[in-house]
Length: 112
Image (cartoon, rainbow, N blue to C red; front, side, top):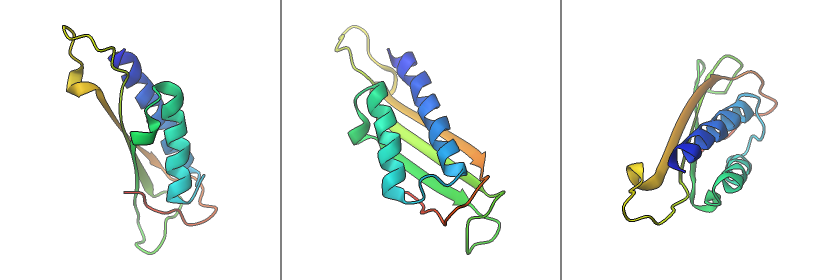
């Protein structure tokens, strides 16, 4: 179950990075809400998930095409409550993805 959740977490992080790369959505709250909904469909623990989005910008004033966006997703995987089978990292899944910004319809917010 942990490895299934880990693979799913990687997929959620890649999808979130793609959303961030095309500027959808630009607000931090909407971005986190969308990513947490994806995590909910995976493990049901999206409400407690940590979702961050940051930008490495060539020009410090604004995000532009070609900049780098980094998305990190952290959540607790499904725990089967088996005392003889402990989960790796207490079942916490962390996945980080970096990608190039491809489209900036409006200036996105950084989510920390």
